[in-house]
Amino acid sequence: MEIAIGVAAGAILAIAGFVFGRSSGRSLGLSEGASEAASRIKAIAESVARGQSPEDAPAGSPEAELHSALERGWSPREAERNVALVEAIGRVSTFLETNVRKPLMDAGEAAEADELRERIEYALGAISDIDFFLEKPSMSRSGQSLVSLVEQVAHEFSGDQDIRLRLQLDSSPVRAVVSGPVIMDVLYLILHNAARFGGDNTVDIAVQAIDGRSLILVRDHGPGFSDEALRRAFDPFYSTSPEGLGLGLPHARSLIAQMGGQIELRNESDGGAEVEVSFPSS
Image (cartoon, rainbow, N blue to C red):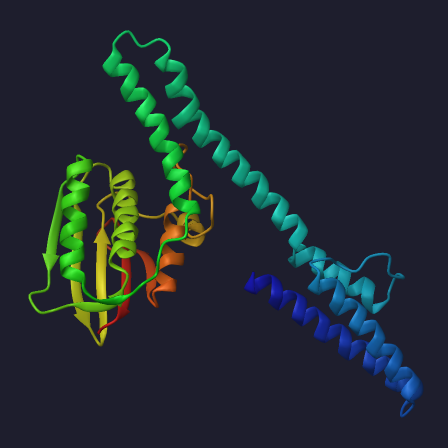
């Protein structure tokens, strides 16, 4: 989006100089020329602000030049929204087909009551996952020990998933003003992502305080982020996993930001991906 705005702003500034320069040469000092140019620039700016490109402009006019520049380097917001909507619908449809419809269809063929119950619970769990991303958690914050919160999440995650976690916890207090339940949900999402893409390898979790900030580092030992994944990891409904919703990291970033924290992604030089969550130390 910054690129889009930059292209549009640069084009408008260039056209403004062209229009005002031409008007000045034609009627230097006359308010009529300046008023006409200002009106044309205002109309162009209003079109761009609506996410539209100026069309039906006379050939060779500033408006036509701006339209050409925008076509080369900018997509109107309406087009971007349509692309995002199609991607979102496709992602949700695939998720429901894989995690809800198929398990329920297979449940009809289950011979044992336990198998039937398991398939139904799996489908209901998938629906609960969607509900989780829709609800707004309480953001009641207080000073918390991040070491204690990480230990609780690690214990819960290890009980749910067959993934080995390796903890490296700072011996000194590492505290931040956060919502305990919310930061635990965030860490669970990050651990789930690390386990999914880490190739069933050990996931490392470190908690430390550096330069006035409290850090939680989660590192997997998989192939790491692709260039596209690093660029789009926080885009809603983007996922490199066919069965994923693509909402985990975007949701985590939103919750972390609401608590005054930051999240960063990177690849490690010796392999694997690392997620860093940080807050001002309290």
